[in-house]
Length: 88
Image (tube, one colour):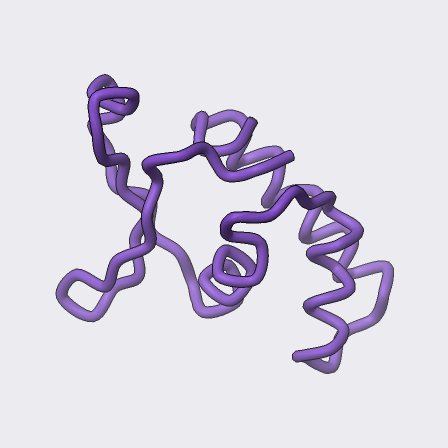
């Protein structure tokens, strides 16, 4: 999967959010708030093809977490990103 073109990470009032920009995302009318870990993962995969396993590997390099927990959390995050339409 890959983050769709036109989705950018911004900091607004101290919150990290993903917003859609450009004509391709004109119908995306929401801001998606990210916690610290999701922000880290977005930055890690931005502009790249990735899998939940790739994201879990990034988590393992950065945080003290078990492989199983990292993979489960990354799968859930990917499902959420697919559901709201920011990845393809």
